[in-house]
Length: 238
Image (cartoon, rainbow, N blue to C red):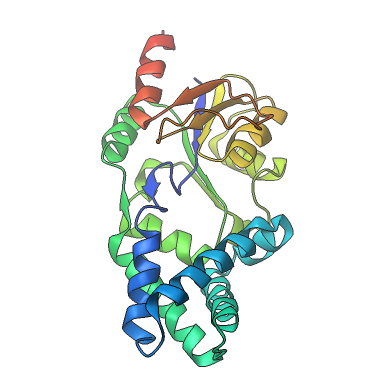
């Protein structure tokens, strides 16, 4: 392993855990006059349709507060009570609640420490909003572990574009190749995109659900936690 690139959300950081609860509690806090069950149901549909559009996802994920406000606005319209001010309030409350509960996965810091101590060049490669991603990195004290941090909202490109991986590797002083591993939870962004550049694509399947039946991407390796990557490194290192 000449270098290791890592995704952030749902790879190092538990990003999706608690999202449903945070939406529900945000609605309860600022939209108490509306039927909570109906509004949360509308939000579920709105969130799914909003992010299922690949082009909209690419465009909107670099400004998450704006995206959450749009999602809430669509839900309120579907509910039958359009209110731009309330949509913004729901989004802001949701953002605050998400920040309060976000945390690294239990093994993350220890594993990063082992890899860093072993001299493995580490790069953090994440899509999304520059402000949100930097806040997560700072809150979790991740920056000292990484020789390269590439954030979509800062560089103007996101995974699976090759320029993203190349930018990280250039900062690390490492050439692309099968001895560079990219680990992440998204089959296209973290595995297929990396493989197209000749990297070793590792899929983080924390739930242990296995590859979806319709998946066309074939990871070089599947792991359920970062300590499996550390064990693999110990096996292959001289």
